[in-house]
Structure formats: structure tokens, C-alpha cells
Image 1 (cartoon, rainbow, N blue to C red):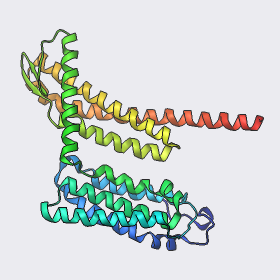
Image 2: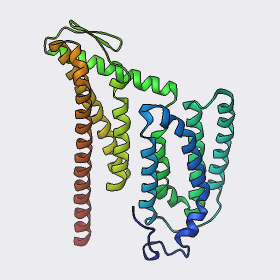
Image 3: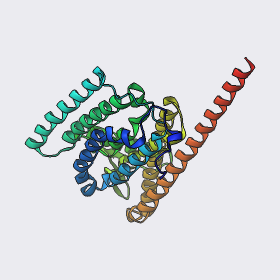
Length: 304
């Protein structure tokens, strides 16, 4: 982690680093409070145990963007006031919801949205509109570690389970393997194989989303390139998980259901390595393409 940027690398706005960090204390407190609320899920739900890593990455991303921050304005505007008011209103409403029904994913999602709006209001007060574009991402990155509301998770997980199971059955049929589909359960001659939540690929999808957003923010410039990496990473994750389920299903047909247990972990780690390698390669290719475009633009500008 880099030390605090020197005054020479900071914008010439008359404010030193410590002064501006003091002005950002409201957003830091809001993020710390949200992290304390989310920590229960990070400690008790295996699929969200990476939340502590995401929190550390948020701090790292903030540190990396600090030297590129815009010129400080320290001006109250209707945008900062509106964002702050709406954020406080959301916190009030979902605190009541939490008191009545407990800390459920839906309540935490509302609290997270309120915290993001308060943080955005604080950034807009300190840096104006440019501050939202430059400095808000390290705050919003924490949303990856928030649990999905039950309705959303049900749609995403069930959709992935059924689609993965359907495509797997079709691929098995192409190889002459008799297989029937019932919901998300694949019926083979050797027995049924259930595509459960873990096999749906939701964990791989979350990890890939975290990796693509993090790598894209650090290595790529421009929303188009970053979104391209994110979408490509998601597709790569889905493809990798499909290959895993197909491999295990074919293995079960050839060697019996016991072979699924022996090959499950190895297949999972192999697909994770495949996905991370693919994401890294895609990021490198997009970065090279971006550099080529920038060089050509500068060359054309010099000729003109």
C-alpha cells in the first residue's frame, strides 16, 4: 500500500490531504457502520465470507484513487443536500424495517443504498460533480459483498440452475448419453444428479464479478472497456461452470455417482483457475487494445 500522496502529486487547491480526509469522515463512518451490519453475513454465510476481502479492497481502491482526486470545492449544493436527505430517509425507513423483521438481506440492501447516497453527498460536497465519477467507485465496490434479497437471489440462482441443467442434458444427448431433466435434477442411468445452489455457479459468478470490477478499475480507462471486461468475465464464469457440471455428469455416467464426489473439488478449483486466467488475459488484451487506440489518436492528432 502506498503512503499518502505528496503535496506535489495532489491537486493545487490549497487543502492538504489530512484536511480533506477530515471532511470525508461522514462517509467513512457510514461505510464502517454498513460494514458492521454486513459482518454478520460475512461471518455466518459461507458464500459471503469474501466480504472482509472486499472491504480491504475498497480501502486499497480509495488509496489508489486519492492521488487522482479532483480539485476540492467544499461547497453545499442542491445535489449534495438532496442525496444526503434521501440517504438519511432510506436509513430511517429501513432501520424501522430491521427493528420489526430483523436484519434480513432486503433490509441490508436498503441500508446499503442509504449509505451510498450519504457517501455520494459527502463526496459531492468536498469535490463537486467530478468527485462522484472519480471517488465513488471504491465506496460502491462494497455492494458486491452485500447479500442479495431473497426474491432476487431466488430468480438468479434458480435461473442459473435450470439453464445449466438444461444445456448439460442437451450436451449429454449429443454424446449419446440418455439423460432426462426434472427441474434442476439430471436423471442418468446411474442415478440422479442435482444441480444445487453451489453448482449453479452463483459463487463463481460473484468471485468473477469482484475480480473483473477490481481489475478493470485499476487497469482500464473508460466505462465501455470496463463494462466489456465485466460482461466477458460473467460469460466466462457461466461457461466454466457449465463445463464443470457437464464433466461431472459425464463422469457419473461412465463411473457411477461415487465419481462425482471424488472429482467435485478438483473440477471446482480447475474451473476457478480457468476463469481467473481468462479474466486476466481479457484484461491484458483490452488494455493493449486501449493503448493502441490512444497511440493512433495521438499520431493522428500530431499529423493534423
